Length: 225
Image 1 (cartoon, rainbow, N blue to C red):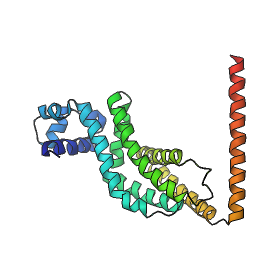
Image 2 (image 1 turned 180 degrees about the vertical axis):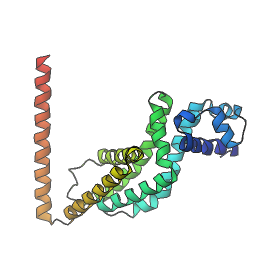
Image 3 (image 1 turned 135 degrees about the horizontal axis):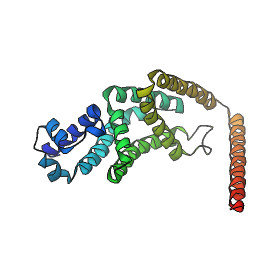
Image 4 (image 1 turned 90 degrees about the vertical axis):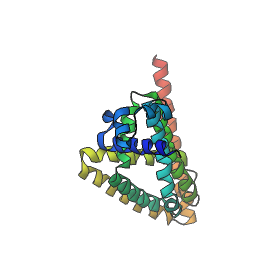
């Protein structure tokens, strides 16, 4: 990658980390990069374009660093443990805060919103790959939708970063609760063949009833209009 582009991307992440989305401008980024601010527009077209590129390339680079660690997960509980390690490492480095700031800026910037979505999808894709593998022999196979669960997990860890800024103790307790959930999931993985079939049947039945009730409520609401 062109050295100036690399400097500007790194400076953008650093500016988001230290000053938040409100502190981002061509001037502040160029100053952090040690280059002329005209180069922001030369290389990226706009500050929004630079922010977008920083979000997507940064997510891809960070996810690649954890790919080998994800590959070591053999169960949902192990995935949750790795998730906590990842959260703590990314939190300490300030990288989850950068994504949170990008999310905040996305409320008013469609270009940044699209890039932030793409950055989140990088993590979702990594999680989905792991979930497809660890759910294959789990009692949850065929019951839990891996793509949806991947989005839930990714959203949860982003939410915990925002929570941590206001209530660190509350965020810690939430992470502890995830550890408890991991213990329950580990128990499910230990079910025998007969118990696994019963669990899946009951879970599907409960889900079917829920869908039926939701459809009834929706139909009732339409008839009133």
